[in-house]
Length: 640
Image (tube, rainbow, N blue to C red; front, side, top):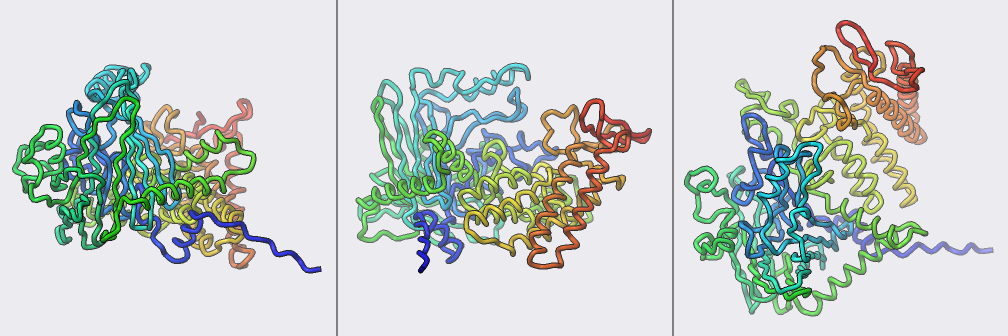
């Protein structure tokens, strides 16, 4: 009797886009939410003598000072090399500055450490960013910048934090819900719909300034051609043209007839440092034009490297106003950029997103749980950020390159080989706008649910020669790449391998072999650098218990000696098990891996034996039923 052919499940439109990206190289991911929420106060932008990144480049300076290594903005997007950036700026007619980026407190200003003091939400995103939705809650009265700083600074560690809601700024619902939706008609044609909902009881004014700008590359790499923006209005359609030698020509088409404002993405030296500006039109020119009504701050010739479309709206009580734009590399001829097709494409992408998440939601999951899952994954996808950091150039600019005869002091000197210029999943694009090695490994597990190709790429990234140290160490995080994060890349590797096996019914042995070789190198670094006594008990430092330790375990001990850590040793036991599983899987296809599997099995047995010893040579305390760290000082060993 003939067998009935099993019908392949119909692929969703979003899965087909992922297939096109993987199999045909269609650049569906080329544009995405790759702007940071905070570029100021980062290590990359720190050129201070004392390494105080928070105070060297502040939020107050950010509107006037050109960034060196990246950009930030509200609901921001960019290409995957962050040449061209797009984000939202707002003004309620009362604030002292445009709202161009999220505000928050620095480490020294807050009573519980750095903290963003805004309310914004990543509501939705597909893996290719064919559809995205973002919400920002903008007060209608003057934003309480000084109140938030002064009140939090006056509180101690036992006091609660003083939040934006506590200031009363949202009383009587006097705020706007600003929704930003993005929908791709093609990989290089992005539709933008901004809905401004007045939640208050009376009509209110709001200035909406969708802003396009080039990251400033010409100041730091003068050999590069400077890009240009210009007024490109034609046939009654307001438009900004942006030309760059690498990405070509792009246009922002603006519905209605907004006033276009042009300036340069150049530092306002006069405001910040009291020195002359290289041009009369600087980064905060649009801010000064709108807020201070200083028309001379923007270029009357309508050219520059930063431009905004200025919409001045009055929104009725409980009413919503809509602004529509289109960012595209297509020159619009007779086709109207905001005709019926605009709404049809936007609605189609919303349906695509609904269809995609329905398809990956497990059976039996209720509506509320499905919504939580969807928004959580959307948050992960919005959390991708272009991270640019050329350590050789950065150290040279600090006169701290270790290969130079005359060299100063700067963090990360031993990582001069490292060049990061990738879109990377961030722990948080405001509080932690930099990758952390073990966070990234965990992120890949969640991301594999929606984009297994991205997950594997992200896991492989820190093992690339431009990142992984010649000794085998994986960079931890930008404040100190030489610090140590828990070794969870092995666990994430076998997880992703099994996940792809489950999702696609096939395995990626090339991925497994490539990563395994680099992990073996990293395992050797741990064994040679973090087991000082050669007794299979490991040190480490920053290994996940940083918030409950009585002292900084990454710093030298005041007593001398070193600390053998129960958690560090347990992590290495897990790492051994992960490597055994990977080697055994590879050995099923190539017997050459059998010896490596046996080697990692020996490592595991030795670690388990060492941990479980009773007395000063082990970590187990029979009476307490607990594993303790071992402090080894010049005077001997003690547990505690």
